[in-house]
Length: 353
Image (cartoon, rainbow, N blue to C red; front, side, top):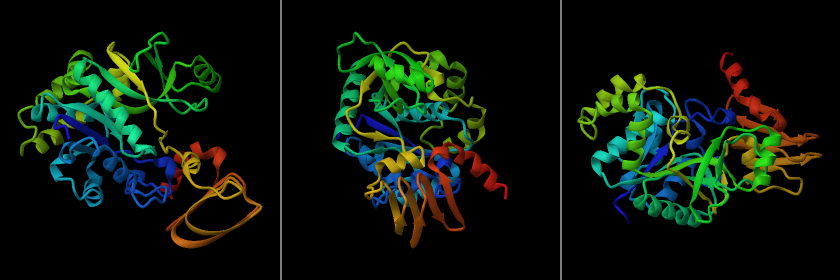
């Protein structure tokens, strides 16, 4: 296994569209969302550890999830868990982790990956990741794995690559914001647009050079702590300075500004499991397209529903179509799938009760 390979596993999100299962105290990455036997973070860690030494996988998360990480990933040491004292989006935490890695190994190449995505063909994922690592070891490149779009999705950003580029790794023309339906349809017809899955690959040198160039203020802030990284003084430095960083994503901070951006069109199945509807797509279904997790059900005149219970509860449904039915401790959610994007708003209302 290559000792220059590193991973930054992003595990700080709340996953509020999966309420009431995913909560601020216990977000979706720490749940077995598909009833597979492993939580999403466990699946992601296992997938990355096929290529990357376990000790080189860093987990970036919020302070409140430290115990959950160590409980679910017992092979991980405390120093591999980087705790964010404040929510500051993806750019600051990636810079912080990159500077730590650079101090440990200036020849490192790394992947930045969300902890809550679902990838079925793990061998294909490993092959794609290896291809990206090989490219980034040779080139000064900021890379991303682009996902082949299967329908005109308006919930993802898109990556437009150079149509004339016949190489396996394509030069990126530009990142495009989440489109409306007509624009998304035109992207699919054009054939040179990929979904932005938020998986990035680069050498530690390339990404820190990019921060120096495009985010000098943030870079200066975190460079001040260079003596303290990987030492007993690191925690105090981060506690004092982290919240001073701008709240900005890596896409806005770096990827949309840089010229040395490349994409590899992924050859694996991918689902970001962002909503109950996307989870329903991945489940085994009955003859009426109902998907069930952790529940015994009796259904009549019911189709296209997703049903989940935490206990082995008997749930009887008659006359419901296209609904999300979730039973979780003190909450019962019965909600139309067509309005699933509203669940985040409903969560905020429910939390005030």
